[in-house]
Image 1 (cartoon, rainbow, N blue to C red):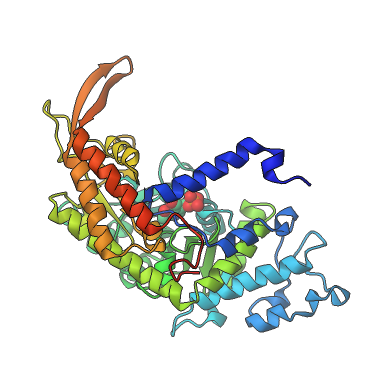
Image 2 (cartoon, rainbow, N blue to C red):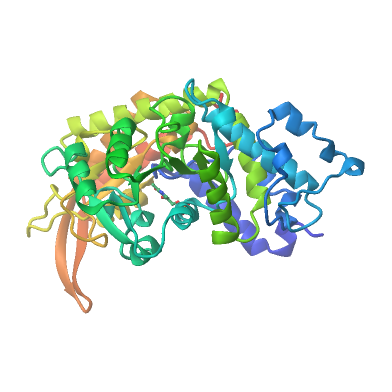
Length: 474
Ligand code: PLP
């Protein structure tokens, strides 16, 4: 019965200091965002306690929201059991899951593809299991899949050799054009014709441009492949109609719910074909997973309701504007932006042009470490030209967190200036250690201290309170 602070004060304190870190630092990790309080309340709710293997009753799916909420099952005395559930006690879970599915279909509907035509699975525990479920639905071990090379911005689950997708399937990878550092659609078509993949994956982790969905569909059609759009990163931007949607173009769309969508950790799978939807449902459960995380589905239903508001759409549009401002200023300051820019919420910086006296190029990891100590949190990332994921020469940034905290374009100019000041004040050098050669760096103390104070000022301006509603965003 006891509260966390009494039962486990140490863990309670860890939560407190993590909450403090999140307001003290300027977080530029593009795969993160802060989930609104309402979402976190649902996440901590009693739905956490349940097993609900299976799916809601067919009769509930596809109903408009009011009808789902008024469904007689809501009243225990009219309880009707879903044949597609293995446990009893899930009458309210059915309503929650049907609601999440419906809200998702409505959010991602387009004029050409209304909600009634969109089938949604909200059970994947995260993005990787969602992609794996799609593979389970359509592939046999040894079949060929084709996605973007991990080093050029693809995800591990798009066929990386260290991931199940690369171990079980014959993965071939397209890359960016070495000159433009952008996708060359003719080269993608040629590779597809050569290898005849069963699934082609478009959608990325660090490639910063929205793919041309129609061109990808044409390429998939030309070789009889299924087009999987993995829009994990840009789901919020798509929902807000800030960038083009693959819904109605790709055969299957997957996305995580905790990045720009600002929801709980989880994932969704969308399709517009009922036979495909059935295959996907079976692939998620029992193919890939056991019991769904009902508390996460409840929290997702809340996040999807929030995502239908004007303030969410304004937030997403500001996220992109902020990314543009940040990218432009970084470039003006003389930093090289790989991939030629960005039209989304994320971008990259090439660190290797900063070279120490002994010729050591600044690594992405060292840059990220130094920036973190100054209070700017981002991650090392490979960029075109890198040959190993372990030796990344780039850093990746994104604007969801900062935009949620109310910062605007002028603030992004200051963030870019702080990053540039620190990177240009850094002198990397190499030393020999027992493990081999390693990188160290010296940073000009005055520049660094000044940068730290400027980070603190910006963090204070952004507010130390992450309570939703503070900046007009629920
Ligand atoms: N797909 C893409 C494009 C991603 O960027 C990510 C996560 O970063 C995933 C899938 C996997 O999501 P998760 O980490 O939730 O498994």
